[in-house]
Amino acid sequence: QKEVEQNSGPLSVPEGAIASLNCTYSDRGSQSFFWYRQYSGKSPELIMFIYSNGDKEDGRFTAQLNKASQYVSLLIRDSQPSDSATYLCAVRLGGTSYGKLTFGQGTILTVHP
Amino acid sequence: SAVISQKPSRDICQRGTSLTIQCQVDSQVTMMFWYRQQPGQSLTLIATANQGSEATYESGFVIDKFPISRPNLTFSTLTVSNMSPEDSSIYLCSSPGGAHTQYFGPGTRLTVL
Image (cartoon, rainbow over all chains, first blue to last red; front, side):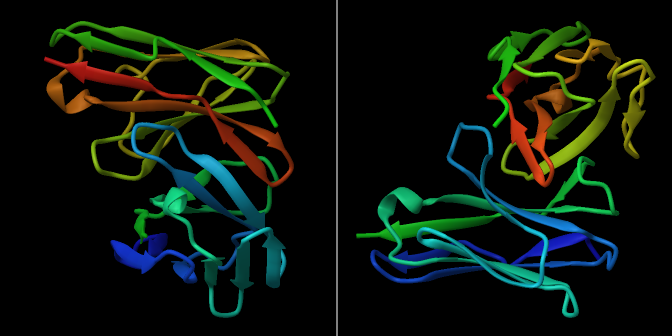
């Protein structure tokens, strides 16, 4: 079992819809969870991080964390064509606030007009 | 957020040669991370560079192939030694921007012929 797994893509949604991206992790000691967006040819850009159970909202983005189920998700409301990118889930294993991240394989999102 | 720069942005190298990649952060950080992103793949951590001590390498990566220097709290280098076409990847430098965040440099796109 991979340490961090994301739902297989690619995911295609129409403009204005909600895009749902999912991620599971295997280490119950994981403390922090990150969503990065990566445009083709660019480096990953941090969208959100979450470390407490529940929802965290930032504009059109909502991250959801369920530590009991070892599950983290990202919802993108009112999806726009500019949201088309690869979305990477990352997990910080262990209890430090500054340690290394382990990445999932990424989900390609396409938002079509 | 941390501002991270890398040099070179890209390079084309011959098999058997070495390339040194530089990473500069605009603030002092304890940890710096080096990742590799092979074509169409997610990010894989190569090593953690700590100032004042030897780098910590992940499974599958060795110091002879990827020597790392960390002379101060804002700078690090990664050398890709004795290159082969399989080393063709994007190499990314990363550092924490504060608790629960981590930022990436723009990356170095390496092609080995």
